[in-house]
Amino acid sequence: GKQEKITITNDKGRLSKEEIDRMVNDAEKYKNEDEVQKERIAAKNGLESYIFNMKSTLDQDQIKAKLSETEISEASSQLDAALKWLDANQLGEKEEYTDKQKELEGSLKKLVEKVYSQDGGAAPGAQQTCGQQANQAHKE
Image 1 (cartoon, rainbow, N blue to C red):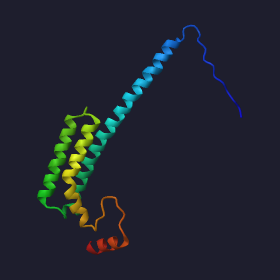
Image 2: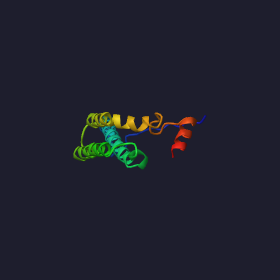
Image 3: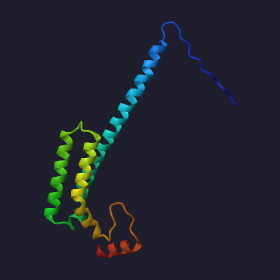
Image 4: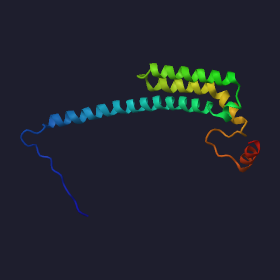
């Protein structure tokens, strides 16, 4: 096939070899920092998304029907507290966000299991069998 060669020449007023090397080294150094920042933001966004998804789930009538007022109130309080914590810790480390999410998931686990055990074990987003769909249709 066709081959093209690019030659970089050091014309007057251009960057020196040392300047180019320094720029390449800086780019490598900042690449690692960018990766850490990217992971930190992903963990923060994951926690925020989890909180809002759970708040939205608790707001659904079919979920409210399966839980007591106290359970909904306690779960909402935990989610509100986590949201306040998130707002106060915008510059937290990745581990802080993932630990907070695990803590929240752990404290809400029994509630989630209670809701979805009444659906024949179908967790959010899970595919239901034909039998589960038929049973659900008869309930409604």
